[in-house]
Image (cartoon, rainbow, N blue to C red; front, top):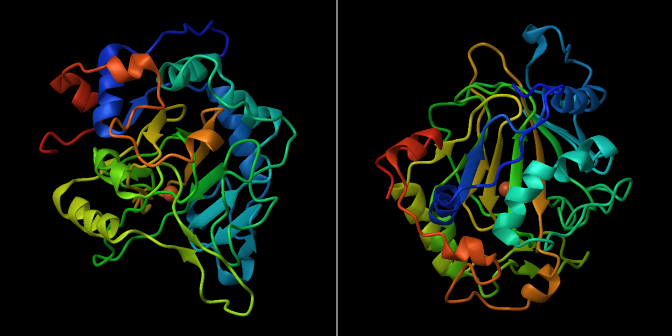
Length: 329
Ligand SMILES: [Fe+2]
């Protein structure tokens, strides 16, 4: 665990880590965010706890009864999902997006000085509402983090399959930070390694996904139109690629590419555990210009020269540290 009294040593990603990110679309870094910062964010979350939850009584850590549910985008409460977005631009959360160590790594990938800055005390994600009525909240409509996302324990049925998706809003680099320990199969971020390279060329635009314009007189006609080739590839990826459960300890982070297939894992924890994580995106400051382009033959065109040049072989040790199943393609 990072001791807050210790001076944190800032160190860059090495060439193998950058190569790993290019190849597999994610990169786990252990023990990055201090325990103090994680505690502060968990405290923010628990101030919004649904009434049936007692922070100190794991026996109460059950799905949210419908009478305590909320469709407010700033505090979404539904079954196992407890998503608090209202504090996404508080100094506590913005300071993690600006953490010198995390920024150094993100700038190695996107270019020094090239990352759009969050706005302290700006508009949190959710304050603009949803992407379309009853739709998801759009992280581009926010000036800080996505928020703190908790997943309550609930045993998945044996027929409940892992299903991936890619995010429908434009961004570059996602980050998930565990705010408390999260054992395997307990709701951690789950990703399909390498899928970003397969999905990236299949959209007409390199960052956007096409939305159906919403009109109130046709309330059911809404959402995202997925290209046929993409949907076929989703089926193939789910058949041929084992997902990686990005479980870990408080303070661990995972970087992920914007076209990487992923899902919020089911929380099947035997000893009740609540997965609590901070989610945020880094965007290149020229995202709105870069969005206008179709996918490039070189999918790393918009990324740093250092990342583009990283082509190192991946060792078995690194694959193990990254929790990657060795049978992956
Ligand atoms: Fe997602």
